Image (cartoon, rainbow over all chains, first blue to last red):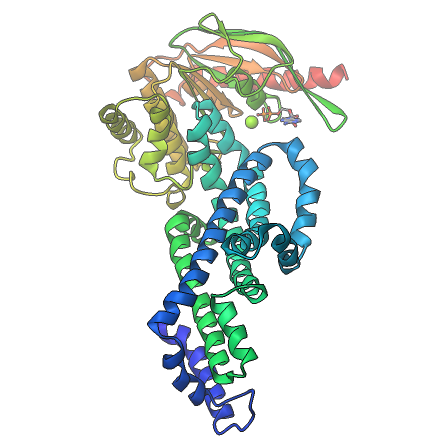
Length: 252
Length: 260
Ligand SMILES: Nc1ncnc2c1ncn2[C@@H]1O[C@H](COP(=O)(O)OP(=O)(O)O)[C@@H](O)[C@H]1O
Ligand SMILES: [Mg+2]
């Protein structure tokens, strides 16, 4: 039943795509059948290694860095009301800047290598994580804080056993937003200046009018997004099992 | 010995000052079970937090065995009024009880022992692996109590711990506290707004006025040490004592109104 629920809509959509484009003469919208047939030739193991893997590694590096920076700063800022009041408007401003705008700026001083692309991802991902971490740390329950204090929970133990778990649900919510931003920025950074990567490949196909191949790239990108959000969900279930249980218990 | 001397607390903030405690002086000898009874809003929680070192008094001092309390003193455990929010929802019951023991750097074996003993003592021997939110309110409060006694405190502060549990559970928990107190020889300061509860539990009852708070009377409870819900509460002496406490609190309300 569950499997059916998850797969029903995709199957219907694919079927619609398949029949709507079957026998299409339109150059830019080839039949789905043509697209699928060209996929195995395009996405060979070599290509996966040469283009998908580097993209993924940069995505992972950028996302992880953003997590570390966002959580660390979030804990520092969120636990100090004065600092928070001073810094929060600035953070909101920075968050409001659409990250792709930063690509040309970052290229200026970080060049066009992997470093630039990772930096672009970090610069976009860090805000939702940071702002959510600040809010999560700020909102730690007062009774819990006093309990921790009265039992002498201080320093690292306090961080690991009180602050981080308490802010966990918020941080994870921020990380989920950050992940979709990361995927977008991974592609965009590769469209600007690159010699490898999924985004680069798609643009290359488009420039050489290899339209079915271009479409396969877009589909691969979509599948990658699904895969990553699936992995994220697994991690979330592991980390926030208690929270989902608590929520269910409260709903009764 | 716990010593409270000339304690004052005025909350300031938002350009408004709330005088919660005016002037409190009392001592709790080692091994005593003292109940503090007073109307809601009279500053009982405020007093307890000052004693626990969680709140800085505006004046006066709190000393524990001669040492001034400036922060949470070691050897003191607090059971909060809001028990549901004082348990860590991301930890199972056993981990919740064990956490303070880790802070005390007790060896693993000893920690396990204490967790087992204390959960058994509150009748939750089979709840180790549950999360707090899977338990009823009364059970959650018992976990908080188990955590406090596993800590082996010399002083146990309890802030209206049974205010939100049903009558039957409440009676059981009252007997539990008396039992633990007799067995462990710990000093207990028990705060409540319930007059019957104060008289039933305490070896002594401190009656607080309504805010700004002073002590109206320090009343020894001369009921026998062995108490039980059915018979103790039915004795004429119990009725006398509770009536006395009730009258004191009523009288205090009137005088406070008079001098306003
Ligand atoms: N953080 C606070 N800021 C300002 N006023 C407070 C604060 N906490 C308690 N009060 C006030 O102090 C008085 C005593 O409160 P409290 O100690 O909670 O009473 P009780 O526990 O006896 O019900 C009340 O009038 C309450 O409104
Ligand atoms: Mg209170």
